[in-house]
Amino acid sequence: MCNQNSYSKYQKRAIKFLSDFLDADTPFTYERTQANHLKVLIDGVPKPLFTGSTPSDCKSINNFMAEVKREVKTSKEMVDLKQDTSVVKISLPISFKQSQDKLIQNCVKSLRTRLEVMKSQEEQKVLENKSVDVVTTFRSEAIKHALSFALQSRRQGNYIKAKEMKSLETKIAMHLNFMMPTLAHYSELLDSKTKYQEKLETSAKEALNSINEQKLTQESVLNSESEVLGKQSDEVVSTQIDSNVQQVKQSSALELMTMSSNNRVSLLRGLSKSQSLQLIDDINQAMAQNREQDIEAVIAMIKEKDLPLEAIISRIEAA
Image 1 (cartoon, rainbow, N blue to C red):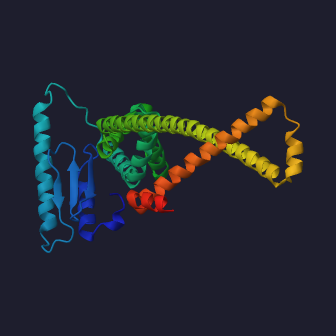
Image 2: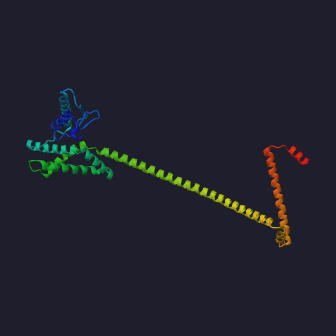
Image 3: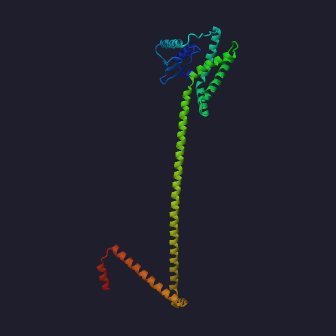
């Protein structure tokens, strides 16, 4: 908005006309639209005024000037009707008023060149402090800085009293407030940021709760799996032990049978009568279990091969 190098020659002429025509008591602001038109807002004028970028008609600037003058005149007439006629305004000397107006315009021009930076800084301060109270302080400091710089740049001029300085700051603040965002804008911004922050916090809490629930579920599953694995490992160990016992028994029995008959008899003679009877009983039981196992294996083979039982019986009888 404030970098006039980006404006066309026609738009620069319109901006200069606004600065010259509108006195120091009438704030205005302007910006370029997406269609490359110049949008002008004037304090007291109820509607924005637009002008083109590079009009082909040379009378376009004159038409724009006439429209501005007409709208400003109408606005001032409405203000005069609303004002109390009993109040007598004190008119300042022309030279002194011109000097003050020039000083105000220079300050406003200086502030206008830094407008975008000031908007960004002001918004940052509002968000950091989470309050619109910092706006007044920030703008007051900016006005004092611009006014001090303008006074230093002034070649000549009378001494400005404290009361007059306060009046200048008030008028410059009127221009700056018109160009800068309103307090209502910052209030809405804070409200939206607060709602967005609350939404983020709620989402974060929900995500954290979801993660905790997932962790609990995973821990429960892991505990269940650990219990299952523990049981399975116990069963595997038990099975392995039984297998080892069987292998030990088989190896012991095989070792006994690999002995010579005399050595085996000599070894068995060391048993008592009850132990010998128990051994005979165990041998008979083992033979019975083997026989049952063989029968089950034969039956399974007959079913698997689908062999006729009559043919098998006849073959057995024939043998």
